[in-house]
Image (cartoon, rainbow, N blue to C red):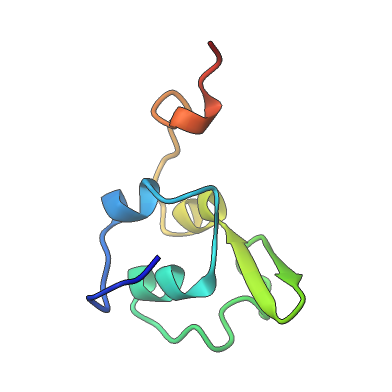
Length: 77
């Protein structure tokens, strides 16, 4: 996903996939993505040279409540 602006809102971040790369997290928090994953603040895994971060762990970190009924990926038909 390409970002034109260097800041994104919580609503835009909520609509992202469950697993995101560090760049949108850095844009949301207004910080550098260089050491974002290495300090253990978020649930993250390294896939080769790339880091992937759990979206819900970021939302919990900033104090946003996670409503599972709104997430389309968790709805059961």
